[in-house]
Length: 60
Image (cartoon, rainbow, N blue to C red; front, side, top):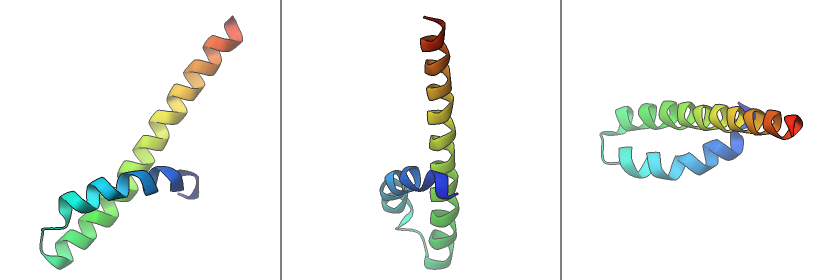
């Protein structure tokens, strides 16, 4: 999870503002799970893009 700290930081603003109007116990749980999941997903996609681009650069 520490490898995705930048991604978690970036996605938290959008998720918090979207889920904040819900009731307290529900919104807190959804925010924590949503921020961590979205941050990990963004990290995975960025790693996939980076690996794909590096493979293309190595072939050239």
